Length: 244
Image (cartoon, rainbow, N blue to C red; front, side, top):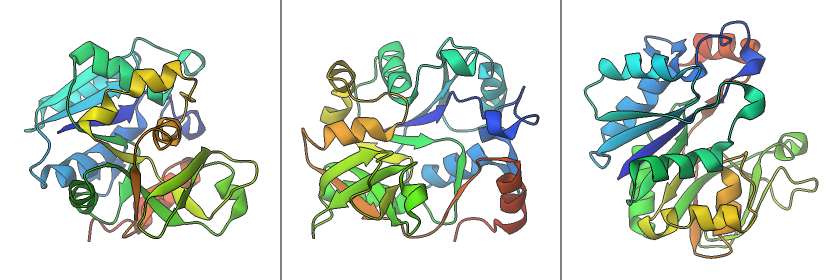
């Protein structure tokens, strides 16, 4: 399995600390955000390569970070150097697939979130389902739902509908940016792009994919800390206690 880490954003809401430094490499406790994610995932023993998809401005920071890691880590530079010229998450995924000739099952994650639970639970869930999978959590705040991916599911966790940033959310199940693609479904990313799926938010591909193939949604077994601005970063540094 390959783990694709989406890290090509510019984190403009965290300026000035991310003006010349990538958000995934900010420290939370005694590790960087990216260390928390990679070290946890590696405990599953399922991933044989980590692919960090970066913009051109920050690629050298990730390359320096990767040198100190024991895992096999490949940094892919998508060639962009401003927030205005970014490719968007779905095109970045396809860029990495093409650049490295990837043909494998994939765990696709945003590199700027910390979790208080192990992602190995999600990998085990996907392995049992044998389909592409996402996670979901209950969000009461409808305003937050309109800024996120929202999923509808049946009684067996099968997705029956998904929409990114819906004006009128059809459920309260919100989707964090952690996804598993089967090998066959990873081969369909370009088809999704060609078919007109959104490319900025990574969930846009899943919204298209669930109309083509079965996709299951696991209820998130813990808390996700989203570092969106300076205030939330300071809060996470104070509150985060690691993975339970």
